[in-house]
Each structure stands twice: as structure tokens, then as C-alpha cells.
Length: 550
Image 1 (spheres, rainbow, N blue to C red):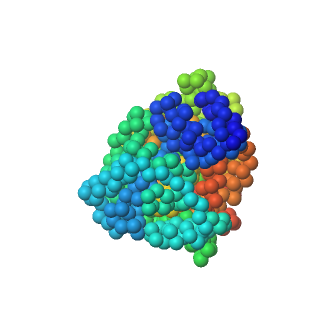
Image 2: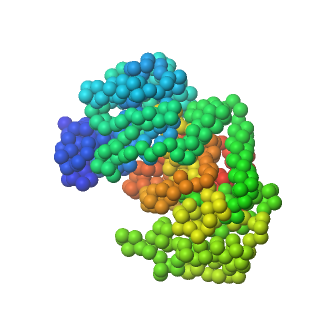
Image 3: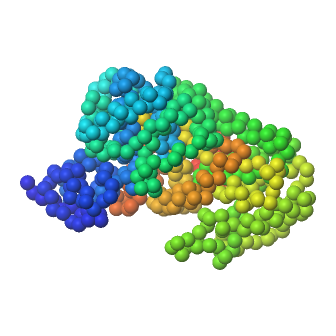
């Protein structure tokens, strides 16, 4: 058998027999890593370790410290959990991964009371399966056979999803007697899944994963806060719409068309915004502070809130906190010596507080505008004074940071946190991360309005997420109210804008791996046209056609 040449990233160049598996090759490099190798990239394409190497290639092995390696661990541990729950409660038991909290999964077992005793039994089966070190094998099956297997295991959500696949075959993973359809790479065996923890929470439980930032230990689970409540509410609304999974959404689109689900979803947004405006007026809060992560729809939300405040007789004035950036030469720098525009220290919080105090005292204040071309704050004669019925809306990523409004009495300000908290999952065991929703939004928006390629947006996304984790999310529980900007139908629209951008990436660019993952994710949705989306929709902020200026 002839040999092939394999260049291993972080290793050396190896000559191996054609047909060598990635798992066999990884054994030669395991001693170089602190953590177990879980998956690999072959010429930038994600692969299970069962993949055979047939041609010369570049290989990068991934462990749990890599985002794709961590996702592989999450998927595999989820299958392990489902196997254990079905072993304890019966093979047709439904297990639902509802949403993520700090990279751990909140899960439910509908129809069963979650007790510490039940979780102990499930966890014991999981540990036994880890000790047994079952191989996790990928099978390519005719779709008819896959549907029969899914029916026998009570995987009704898979049946709904698979009927929309164009392919005549389906890839199922299997260990012991358990089959499942997971959307991505899996670990080679159950022995890799040596760290997990189940703990009761609300009406469900948490599946916890090891935290690399804590040297593979578990992070403390925060108390159930406002964010958890919003996720619960989002799930309830998705079930009311009968669209809590992609398969269910596709069914809805086929039977009722897109018009109804668009109208109901947009009406829910409008109702929520109207209720927030009513609350602001009833509580006589003259300052509204809005914060949220990238691509959460802050600009459109602020404009729509302003309209609802006008309905209540108020006169809203919206100011972007970006206008209070320090002049560029005064902006702090990060560890690499680059300007750090994400930090709160890049904002002139002293001037903001001074202006807010003056406005609340009835004084007339000149509002600045930041010139991003020159890097200077400019004053162009925009003066503002607040009358008793006026409301000032301040919008920006640091809106909930106390330093922005520390001189303003709590009774005078109303704080709103906005984010796109995904309402549906692909199916019961494959969730849609909220970061994926926002990334797809940003891909489309940055191309539409900033001429940025998919490679550029994907390349900067990890830095965006780090900034959000450091500067935005720590303040979210300070909010007086939350607004979930996710739209249950939005991926059906966004896919038609995003897919051409993603397919345009070549395999030799680093962002290709992430592009392929997003293409696979978007392929599960049926596409719908954008014509019936109202011009004031938050989605218009990203695809164009908004009645608001952005």
C-alpha cells in the first residue's frame, strides 16, 4: 500500500499508509497535548477521527480548548445523556436540550418530574458508558431505514426534520443500542467524555461541561436570573406558534405559508415594545438606557420604542453612546498595542454624566457627534433640553454599565437589555446557539452596508465575542427589562443572503471551516422570501428595506 504525506499543524510532516484513520494518526501526537484529541480539520474541513486519509493533506487536531473541539464534546455528551435517560426511563423517552446557559445545557424530560434521585440514576449510567468506552460509529443509512430507527427510539423531532432532506441517505451515529442524528462531528468513543455533571434547575436540569478557563473543572452555576426567564418565555412562544424545532417550523411554512408566522412574530415584538413604553411612562423614567451585544437589533429597537413612547404622548430623543468616544489619540490600547474601542474606558463617562445631570435639571445641553473618519468628537450645534414629558434614549454596548449613568438617580432611569435569544432548536438534541443567530445577521449586514466579506466578519467574530463577554454580559442582570429580538422565521430569510457569501470562501482561508459549519446549519431551513416582512422589522436592519435610517 502506498504512503501519503500528512502535514500536522503543531507537529511535523508524517508519511503514513493510505487509508490510515485520523484516530490512528492522532495517537502519535497525543503526548503533545494536555487534553484528549476529539476531532480534526483536514484541509480546513472538520472531520470525525474515524475519517480515513486517502490523499496528501494538512491536518489540525482539535481538543476541548478549540471551539469546534468543545462543540464536539458537547454533542457527544448530549448523546450520552439521551442514551442514559432512555436506559433509565424507556427507549421512547423524550429528552430536550432547551437552551444554553454559560455554555452549559438546560435540559428537560417532558412528562417526568426531575428529582435528585432520577438524575443520580441517569448520571450513573453515563459514567458506566464512559467506562465501557463504546466506539461512537457513524453509519450512512437509506433515509427509509433511518426513519424507522428514529420511530423506534421515539425521535419524532428527527422524523419531522429528515423529511425535508434532499439526500436519500442519512448519517446516524451509534454506540451500544443508541442511534442519534447529531449535527456535527462526534468523539471517537464514549471514553473521551470523562467530565460532565447533572444538577437540578427549575423544572429541568443542567448538563454541565468542563470549563477550560477553570482547568477542566466545572464553573459554579449562577442563580436563575432574568436571562433564564427570557429563554423560558421564548420557548413557550415557539411552542404556541408550533415552531419549536426547525422541522416543526418547516411543517408550518408548508401548511400555512410564511405570511401568518411573520405577522404573528412581528406582532409579538410590537406588543412587547408597546408594553415597555407603557411601563416607562407609568414609572416616569426620563432616561432609558439600552444595551446589547453585536447584531442584537439595538438601533431598530430604539427607533420602535421611540414611536411607542410618542403614542403615549412623550417626545423621545435618541443618542448613541458612540458619540461620547474619547478622541482617538486618548483612547486606551489593548495588550497588542491596538486601540481598544470595546472597553468602557474608551467612553467619556464623566462628560455623559455631566450632560445627563444638566438635562435632568432642565438645562440646555449641546450633544456631540463622533467623527469616525477623523477620530474626533465634534460639536455641530445639536442642542437638547428635556421637557417634563420628554424621554432620552441612550443606546450603546455600555448602556447598562453603571459608570455611564452613576450620577443619575435610579428612579430616573430605565435599563433595557436586548439580545437575540434563539427561540427554536434544530431538533430536540441539536440546539441553535444565540451567537450563530447574531453572526449570520452580522454577515448579511456587514456585506450589505459595509462591503465586508464573509471572511472578514468571521475573522473578527471571536474578538467581538471576547469583548461582549468582558464588557456587556456581566451587566445584563442589572436590566429592568429584557427584549428578545430573535424572530422565529429569520433564518429562513437570512439563509438566502448569507449562503452566497459563505459559499464564496475558498478552502485555503482560515474562515472556511466556520463557513462550512454555518452552511450546514442553514441548510436545515426552508427558504422564504422577504417581501412580506414589514419595513419596521428588526430583520430589516440587516437585510435592508428598513423605514428607519441606520
